[in-house]
Image (tube, rainbow, N blue to C red):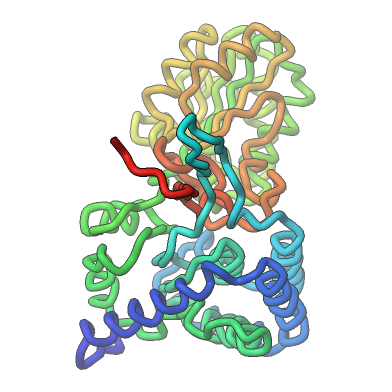
Length: 422
């Protein structure tokens, strides 16, 4: 493990340079920031070979870091994934710059003109694991919204992140943007994270993106606001009035399309009336796709090799080809189950009953609620936000996919003509 002789001095320099960059970024024209995004996208594609070589170096060490199959999948870059990163940056460049937007305003009876205006947050600390693609996503969103960002990825992706950071720095220089707008913590000393989390006077917001243990550590230690979600225990509830063909497509997509991400389904709830028809069918299809099924007694009778589910299974974020299944007597029981075991991330109902859909949408407490659609759509790119810096299940400031607007705050600008308060 690489250690620094003076962690405090290193972190002080990072934050000092980030604050200076943030001051300059706050007044940068949108056209300059968009030019940087487009250059970054071009450089990513042009330098794909070097990025993939760095990623291969990290992948060879994955076993030494004890990574799971899901973590290795998140670590892996391919040409299509690099192309998707570039496409995300171009989509962000095409979005409206939120900085300077007038949220509301008016003129008071005394003649004061008061405007509430959207402004950058300032300096963002971004902590993440195993997903080098979010290096680019986070940097692009931060700079477009006028923020400086300090990136601290996991040691398992260090070589890939260095290659990506080089691309971002190239474009910053070409566009004459502050070079410290995007900084990468290129040291693996674990003390750096603890030191940065104490710097609440210098860092305005921390965003952790990774396993639950990382996020809980950040929340416990951070001296600045934290934008987060702990787990993605997402449910699909197949209602009595569901189109079963649709339900099968949605369940298989939500669980199997990419099981190692936070918006993948981890739990399936099936209405009692479908236990003898749909349940055996979906259990068979899940197992055919390599999914381990853990279920209630009725689910165990629906197919072979179904393991009994525990409360721990119903609460788990597996991030793997494993799913918990329960038969419920009615919508009320499904809502109770989700309230008890859900993580307020993403919940879905499959139904043709408009009243059931209305009640589900109103009563489920989650950042996103899907009706007749896969949980996998809870994503900034799919919602038209471009890239996202993360999904928040908090209820203050931002909830759901966090894009450009979620990386801004507001301030009041008051224009007078000499008024004084009596």
